[in-house]
Image (cartoon, rainbow, N blue to C red; front, side, top):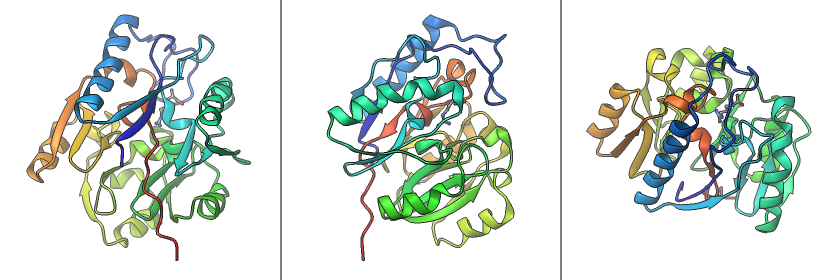
Length: 269
Ligand code: ARG
């Protein structure tokens, strides 16, 4: 898992609106630094042996670098995201790429943040709600993709997507998460899964520590979270820490910039 990723580019990345608490139109990303940062992330994926697919960003889509919100993909099926109005113009570009690559497209009838709120972990789908995803999406995701859905509610706009609060470290085995980002029933559900759980503090989580990409061997993450990085290394993982300063101005990190194309298929009964 996470050996095949769909990315875009930072050529048109800007902060034109404020749809999460990290975005401030007065604080714009530095264009050259943002391009270099994004290229650094892609270079790290390639060095880890990951296949990269690419959709060019469009001038009218300042957040298109965050491909994770475009959809959630499993096998040849893609459930499209239904983002806030500011980001709707991205969808046709992703839809076109998915159709050209023979994906069967399902449209979301309710607000849905795509993979931002839908993290595959073995046979489980960790499914965020409460911010950008309507809980009614969960039944559709279970039915159409076949995973066992674990609903997880994030408690504030700081955690506007689940991929800021939870990171899949070893699919089906190890998760890192920030307990304070989830409500109590969600914490209980997570603790009841029998997975190995790593706790991350609010300070590192708010610096996008959990917004990581792991294939189970190499973890690609921000360099803003040395405590989590050390914990992962102690567990024998290879950890690559990258600068995500410019992406943070849009409220994103490493995980947000890649849509996973090779999620494991659920074991069907
Ligand atoms: N500026 C983008 C937004 O607010 C950032 C999206 C980051 N994506 C993510 N999967 N967390 O929509």
